[in-house]
Length: 255
Image (spheres, rainbow, N blue to C red):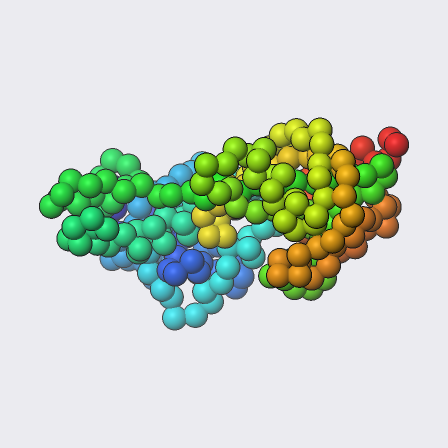
């Protein structure tokens, strides 16, 4: 339930608008609402971290609005709460009116949902399932530089699950579309909420089966097989992609 801040409330403050996050001095603000000029704003508690509430405030700040990516080095639980706040703020912003009848909606008092008083429709935040996979060939791992990545970062292959697909089918299709190879021995590893913009990454490892590597230039700048001890620049620690790469390196050393 949202409440009007009196100024005395304390905790972590996720102030978000249009997928951006307020990061004064590059950090997530912590302290009293009055200290951060948030008295009178509407806020909703979305969690707790280290015994302190985590509050969501939906508004744009005049400066220092950044990306939740800047918080990747934080504790994973706090990063996930920040990502949750950004996603909820965008969900509420994009569901001000009912998609069925067009009437104004309001926020539920008991759950993360938007309600329509006219047609009684109820909307929940939607999550886009994604698959991400590390592929090993003997003592090498397949890494690629995506067109959306800058700074020379190379990572494993990933993509969204399509309607009617299983996760396993999505992995096989994405790998074929982006690299022209087939895989075998696919196994699930873990998952990670990924707020870019509202995804759930489901991570896998697999072995190379057959096919000649040929990357899709619309998705990838390049792709190649890299020996485990001669890797290019990798994704930052804390990401599921980095975990997959590190786990694959362990397997490569045992070859």
